[in-house]
Image (cartoon, rainbow over all chains, first blue to last red):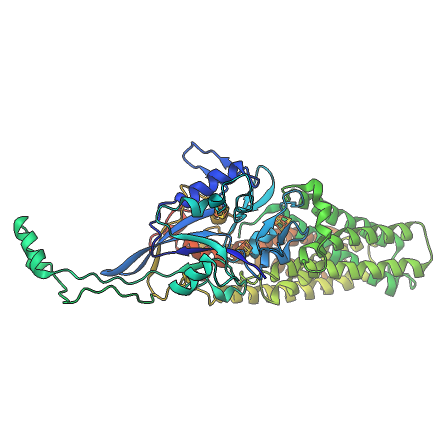
Length: 243
Length: 337
Ligand code: SF4
Ligand code: SF4
Ligand code: SF4
């Protein structure tokens, strides 16, 4: 079996939405396009996107962090969207596990989107068909592209290098290595859909700050730092903890 | 979930036709020979039972993004309840037409009743597949319950019985059967009232164990949405979510129970205690009330459906009911804690 998927490192993601924008740019002109927009320049722009980034605040002040969650189709191994499609327009490819919609068969009943626990399908009101991430199937095998560019548009563009693409059933692939080394996990495993995309958790980073050096800098900047220093560990440490 | 009118009309009106047809075939089998029902009544009722699902069928096309290829929806009947619904709807309409034709042409009773029996099977299969289509979505707790198929059948039979009773009063004035049917309507309306009441009670506490912690895979009790990732709304914030305050929800629940079942129940009881009266008008009104009430009921069925993908947009709350301060916000706007 082969299962292509994305691995997204939440520790590295800076929430810049570049993946979402480049996804839209590639796919609106690619085979899966267009990704139609309503009122794009008005005050209430709407449109079809295959990838969206949500931002959450996790924890309580002062122990708080911001998490950006890029979310696109998980190419589930047990895809409930495929099971319910009455026409067979939604299907899962045997050869690489990519879940696709055949626009020529889709009647636009939206039933598949109800069955997706992750909210990763978006209806195109203009074409009357359901659309979703194709895992850039028109890039990854595209011989017209140079070999190093045969990757999903979102992966190529990510400035933080927070995204990996590969075969998660193949232990040596980049995706599998990321999952193994970064303790990759699946969103909402309770859904029973067995999503293929994985996420790497945020890591706790401790940075040692030398108290003397800080006081010296503060002195130079005429700031009374003694009130602000709340930790003074001695060792330089960077350790990785599970969230 | 967003209550799409075409689906509301389809399920409610087809349900009336199915209920009516089931009842009239049973009356045909039991009472036509003895003359307690007339062919005139059966023909009129069969015509009406055809009109309702035909309107529903027409409405259903407005739901599709590509209605012209709607026929393709029959392909995956082995696994999709929607596919089965798409098969059983025309099957029921076809058998209803066949029955009407056999009735009208005076064909032998055996053929007619056989067509009627097949029609009943198709009608029941249609109730079941329409309902299971919703009940099979396990990510909407309010739908994924045995109450969904029970209610679809029950409410369909109630509305159908009221319509059949109206037809009986018009076409066979003064005959005992119209009087007897008012008991049936009263019983079904009372039963429906109880079931819908129970459903509302169930919905008030239906809530998935899956929470935002699972959705994000982060074991922290304090998680707050800051940005939905969209400048305005989008498919996922609109299709799955309709803000409704607790008061709006409660008011709608009272309207549904009152209009669809309680008032018709009173009317049927009145008829049951006044055997001598011709009550076609009363039962037409009752049918109208039930159908109107069921349209409200089906809309509320959608609106109370709370999909777990709403977790990602801060919209998955207990009771579906939204915080009134929040409910005015446009879908997709980040919500205060
Ligand atoms: S994420 Fe949703 S759309 Fe994608 S395969 Fe899974 S169920 Fe289907
Ligand atoms: S919208 Fe299209 S892909 Fe989705 S279930 Fe309906 S026919 Fe299948
Ligand atoms: S794999 Fe391609 S289609 Fe999917 S989110 Fe990335 S860029 Fe978009």
